[in-house]
Amino acid sequence: MEDIQGKKVTENIYLCPDGKYRWIYELNMLKNPVILFTIWKIFGILILIEIAFTFILAVFEGGVSDWITGYLLSPGILIVPGIFFVLSIIAYTIVAFMYGWKYMVLFEMDEGGIVHNQMPKQFNKAQGLAWLTTMAGFMTGNFTTAGAGMLSSAKSSSTSTFKSVKKVVRKKRYHLINVNEMLEKNQIYAEDADYDFVWNFICARCMSAKIIGN
Image (spheres, rainbow, N blue to C red):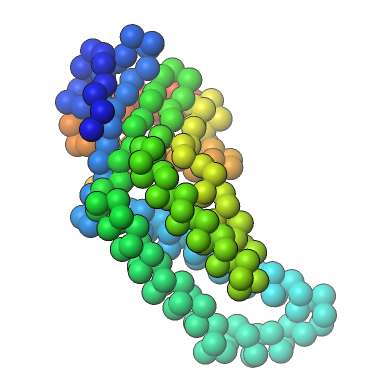
């Protein structure tokens, strides 16, 4: 693990000479399933979007009754969620194994915001897996999957600007703080010894945000 130079303010957080607080968090991907839960949430949203899209088409085509009986109430509607569920577990297990069962993040925080930086070695692996997702999406004609793959392959960090944050959610059980802007959803991790410091720092500066779990 790389060293962080600066004044120690909590067990793992340092105030560096440039005025930024920095810490490294190692997420145990076996014991803490928060990333898997996030994957399921994304899949759920994509499935709901697909259902809404087919409903809108049915409305314009005047076939809502057929849509309800032939699609919404059909046992086949469970096939896609079932496939996503199984594939997500398989993919998560493969990625976790490649990462050595640990997801490592460097966080940088100052008065203006916070940055979630995936460690470079792991990002290179994630790029390869994301491009596999992209190609799989194109090959199957699923452009939603392809688009998600391209986005994940191009991004190694997430930045939250405190003045733009709309919601801050406390999930200390998972060592997680969700910091959400309109379009940017950031996940901030901290150990128990550091959690309250990070939580209070973020909440005090997100003046326009809804605070959940205070």
